[in-house]
Amino acid sequence: MQGRPEEPPEQTDTTRSATPEGAHMTQTHPGVMPSLDSPADEDPDLRKQLAAYLDLNADDLIGFRRDLHMHPELGYTEFRTTERLVERLKEAGLEPRVLPKGTGVICDIGPDCGPMVALRADIDALPLPDEKDVPYASTVPGLSHACGHDVHTTVVLGAGLFLARQAALGLLPGRVRLLFQPAEENPGGALDILAAGGLVGVNRIFGLHCEPKFEVGQLGVRTGPITAACDKVYVKVNGPGGHTARPHLTADLVYALAKIVTELPAALSRRVDPRSSLSLVWGRMNAGSVANAIPDQGLAEGTVRCLDDEAWHRAPELMRALLHSVAGAYEVEASLEYVRGVPPTVNDQASVQMFKDAGALVLEQPDKVVTAPQSLGGDDFGYYLESIPGAYGRLGVRTPGGPEYDLHRGDFDVDESCIPVGVKILVATVLTALCELPGSAVPTGLEDSRA
Image 1 (tube, one colour):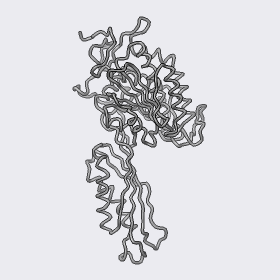
Image 2 (image 1 turned 45 degrees about the horizontal axis):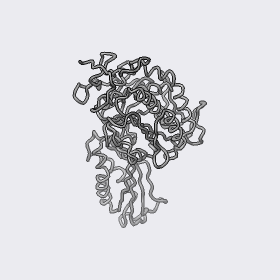
Image 3 (image 1 turned 30 degrees about the horizontal axis):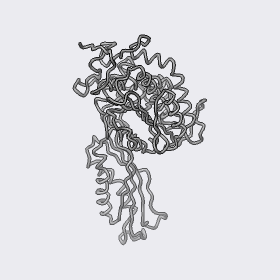
Image 4 (image 1 turned 60 degrees about the vertical axis):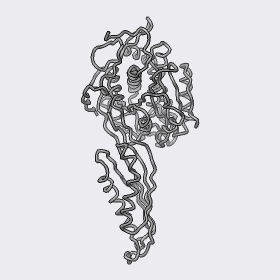
C-alpha cells in the first residue's frame, strides 16, 4: 500500500535540513549528504560508494539473513545469533562486546573520541511456527522470525560493516555504536543494553522496523509517538459469595465485576487528554462455576496502551483510584496488579529530519519518504528515546504490487531487496547525524561549499 507523502515541515532550527556546514556537496537540492573526500581510487560520491559496496556484499547479507531465519531463537536464548554476529564483526577488525547474560552485542566503530550515533537491531524471534514453503524456512519447530528481526539485524550489520570500512579509510566523522539487542518481544532487552552502558556517550540513536504496508524502496517516518506503551493489568475482585436467590444479603460479585469491566475504560477516557490515545481493553474475564451461586472471587485481565509519555506514567495511579471507586459502590474488594511493559516510542523532530534527508539522498525520489502511521503496538525502543534523542523508522519490505504478509503471522516474509535499501538508509542517516553533531571530526580535505 502506498503511503501518503509527508508534508515538508517549516524550516526552523529543529527541522532544517541536516546537511552539515563545511561539506562538499554532490548535489544542490535539499536533503543531500556531503561527499567525504576519499583516496584516489575511491569515488567520492556516497551513493556510488554504497552501490559498489552492495554490489559486492548484498548477496552475502541476504545469505546472512536467511541463516538467521532458519535458526530463530527466543529472547535471552539468542546464543547462536550472537555468535554469528561476533564472528562477522571480528572478521571486520572490530571488537564486539557480548552482554552479561550471554546474548546481545555492543560494538563500537571509529575513533575513541568525538560524537557518537547508535544503531539498534533486535535479534530475537517469536514462538510461532513458520508456515512458509521456502528453502530458508525455520528449522526450529514452533519458532520463526515472524516480525522481521532477522532483517533488522542484517541491515544494521551491513551498515556497520560499511561504516567500519569508511572508518579505516578516515572517512567517518565521529563514532558509531551498533546495538544488537536481545529480547525485544519479551520485552526487556533494551533495559539490558542500558544496564550494560549501551547509551553512554551516545548522542543520537536510530532504528528501522519492517513495514509490510510499504513497498521496498519506501521509508516511513513520523515525528512524535510512532508506537504505543503497552502494559498488562490484572484486576482481582473478592466478596462473601452467596445464593443467587438472595443477592441483597451478599455482594453481587459478578455484577460488580461486569461494572468494573465496562466503567473503568470509560472513566479512564474521561480523565486523560484524548490525544494521548490511552485505552484499556480487556482480554479475559473469569468468575463463578455454577448458575445459582454468587462466587466469592473474580478476575479480569487486559492491556493498557498509550501514545503519550506523561499519561503513561500516570496510568497506574489513576486506574487504582477509579477501580476502588467503582468497586466500593458494590461493596466488593478489588485489587490491581499493574505490570509495566514498554514506554511509547516518541521520535525526536530533528532526528526524524535526519532520516528524511538521508532517505531523500539514497532513495533518490522524494516521494519515497512517506508518513508512517502510528501503531498501538509496543516496542522497547521507547526506552532509548526516554534517555537520548533519536528516531524509529519504517522500512518498506513488500514487493511492489505484491501481497502483504502482516507481522506476527506464520507466513510473514519480506522482499529481500529491502536489505540493501535499509543499509543505504542507515549509513546515510548515521553520516548525516554525525556531521550535524558538535565536535565531529570532519575528515581532512573536506571542502566548504559555502566558503
